[in-house]
Length: 357
Image 1 (cartoon, rainbow, N blue to C red):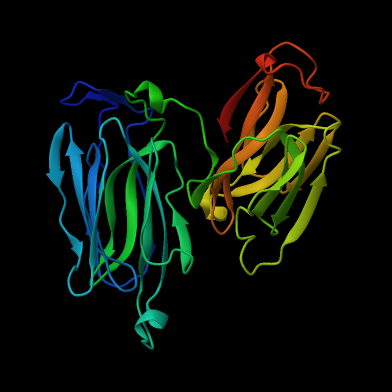
Image 2 (cartoon, rainbow, N blue to C red; image 1 turned 90 degrees about the horizontal axis):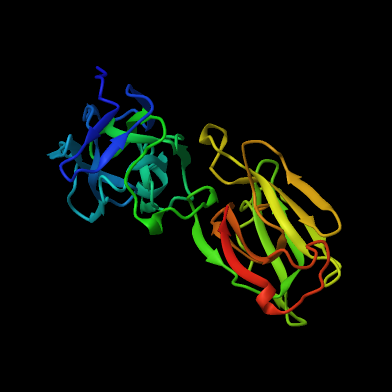
């Protein structure tokens, strides 16, 4: 049964919260059909999640909810015992809101050496208005990926199936943009793309000489850059695994540096995981002479680094099996000189800033 929750409330700390839609929507569950059905019901939000990890995945889960400023524990789902490892995720509620979950589910057949092993939740990652927590559980590169998909929303309850493990998991979500009280250091932009993988940062250089992009039929697999540092060549590491064993296409973008500089990067990332993982789908590079690309399919959510004129002097982002997210370090022209040329003036005429996409 779905219940209506007010679209505005003030918690016990006085922090006000609001949602544009007040009717919870049920997503999932994702995973197997074994175990017993459970449903924690509807609350105001999530404060904490306690997990135990078994040999093949998540063996138990217990959630501390918030109900109009009061802490309420849900029942323990699954079984913890034997060779399990306890893990705890604490959210700074109500300043930090759990918005969506991602994870992998798969069969226990290979790991447990069973003929007909059940399908269980192998790993879980929790995404909030501040950061991603996880992944928790087994090897996330094995199994089937899933996501509750909506980044603009608030998880107000869990449901699924559980036995010896968490066989499947789903969420109740209040859809709509979360408006919560935030500190100044939390209002920074980005990143554009997904929350998976690990963060990377190449740092700041004089400019970009060339770039290699690998892609599969659907996603950007990896990027690697050759930078210029005061006339010397510096290669970055390869960011992303190129889509693992999938057939990849490699693109080489070579600039006529220093006469040609990279000024802008834009592209698309997968915003709904019903069509695959939330990673980059397309990249286009813009230089002082022209455009390179697009490389990949221009489908999904659009992003761009074009905020002020300048040149790209470094990249950063997140990567794993694919290129999950990307950002740039920009050297901006402050109304002096021409961004279409590579002629550098005194350092006081530029400033360095970091943009996350």
